[in-house]
Length: 171
Image (tube, rainbow, N blue to C red; front, side, top):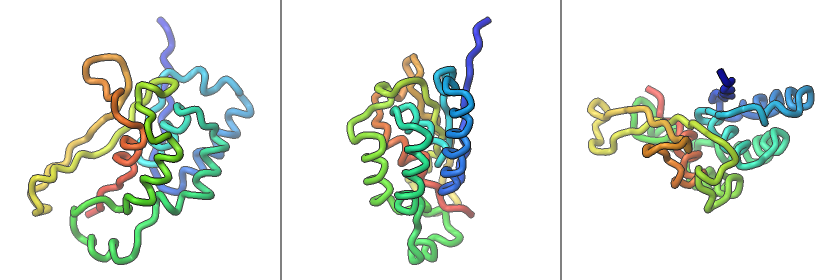
């Protein structure tokens, strides 16, 4: 039976710099580490790392991105935090700066099916049909570029990155 290796990255906002640094050290010890991975998976910042690696970025480049631009991706202004306390109103991080960085990082026109290998990126789908938080529906959404009729290969990578890094407001 063939081996199928999956490399999964967890979330944690700016702590993604630690994941990138650890991966860089592991890759120095074993240069073929990423070549042996059949599927890269992640959520939130881990999803950004998986997408970045499959876009061809190195762990070092991703680490630099977190150091140089991480605050643009994972920053929430005070007013937005105060407004959303105790609600399920929306995303925890503002989208404009995050969108700009993710478009630059992953390419404005790069689709999931153009990435160099399989990805599985998790996010939450928050039903926007009602504004009352008590009646909103949450459901997981798994974006992937695996073969099959349910593939999300036509989606833009930066949009998937936006979805996984949106961090719905905590309650």
